[in-house]
Image (cartoon, rainbow, N blue to C red):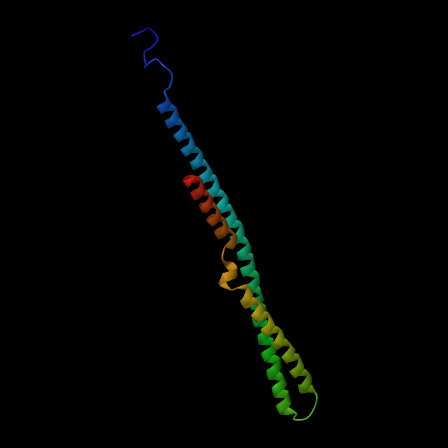
Length: 144
């Protein structure tokens, strides 16, 4: 054997370079996956915070509509009592108009609150869409 041709003293072989390249690729993929997961969690938190704010506003509106409904019932009952007490007169008519307006207001608020509080508006749509896109990109990267 010639001097300097000992394979143990030679530099890294092609097989070693390929293995370190694969390790580097796997390390990069793990770091990118970790970063992607952190970003997805941050997006989920931000979206859910907005949805919780919307839920609180909807609940406050429901409480407001309940208050108006109770007031409307009291006014309507008062109008009915006054009407029965004084079969003729205009006092009951004004109470009836006020009660009707409050009842319409309460119904409008309740319908709006119901639409705001539906489960489809509270679902994290952007996060779901982003996770699908990221999964597709990762599968394309792995396969291609």
